[in-house]
Amino acid sequence: MIADNPAGRVLALACVLTFLHYTGAYMRVPILPLYASLHGATPTDVGLIVGAHTALAALSAIPFGYAADRWGRRALLLGGMTLSAATSLLLPLVEGPLALAAIYGAAGLGVAAFTPALMSLVGDVAAPGTIARAYAWYTTALFTAFGLGPILGGWVTGLGGHRAAFVVAGAIIATALALGAPLPETGARRGRGARAAAFDELRRNRRVWAVWIATIAGLAPSGAILTFFPLLGRERGFTPLVIGLILGVLSFANTIVRLPAGWLLDRTRARRPWIVGGLLLAALGTALVPHLRAPGDFLVLGAALGVVLAVTFVAIGAALGEATGPATRGLALGGYSTAIYTGFGLASVGLGPLVTHWGWAPAFALIGGATALGALVAAVVWDASSGSV
Image (cartoon, rainbow, N blue to C red):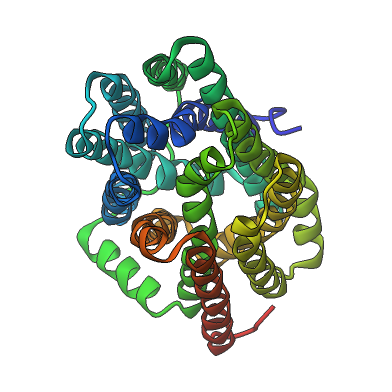
């Protein structure tokens, strides 16, 4: 059990905070594009609104990871949840694309502060030889939230409208903030010379760079699907609840194999084959999205993509944790968060104009091709580091 010792209890609390924070955050994911489009936003506008969120998250994640190494994890966790809750409660007060982009952009700062600090904490408390399982527990909580959030967002919207969904999302994140108040501090506090050495160490660590590249590639499908599937689904005649259900199945499938994957990866110690192979399969699945019509077809593809991405990202988390130590973990995971938001943001911003001018099928095919290319580049960089596994 993860809660049968002090470190295990910290890990359990971290999983609870992750679940609540991202349930609230992901309630907004299928609702914000619909809310914006109902108030006159074009697909390009929707991409820019989501892109503002991911761009600010990408730009700030490394500084926040650096801060987590410098001052510890707790302040970043609590501050991130505070900003996430506040922005959720502000979203229903505005309607225009610029205002939505400003507030949702600020929400990106909240998740950028939370994510590297939380992931660093997981690495801090993981027992030797169990890092893949520790990250599997964390990502199980994360992707349970990713699955529940869109479904809950669609359900609340059906009952009370888009604005009600934003308010409920803010209340859930505020609950996480209250529960996180007694969280103990972890993480090294380092002087200027040690921090400079940490930057230099990561700059020369090719394994870390390979993982960052793989992460960018792996998030491009998610950026495309989570941002634009609500609009594609509406064209197919799906209700908000059906749209949320399909996105939820993708995330729930991504969740249920996390713990078995963590056990397998701790046993085999293999990382590279799972990462590269998973990205190539995700690229193929992404290209297939606009060719489907019926909800059942989307549910099957979503489940398959979820399983593939689950194994891929457990391997990514374990590889990154093994390639770093406590003194550089926050900085490396800040870079990992930046890679997440970069991949997601490039897809969400870039796909809007492509959909507008080319249509769904060429746009999603391009995203799939970019994911496959990223997988191959990551494999080459990985091979340039010592001891490919």
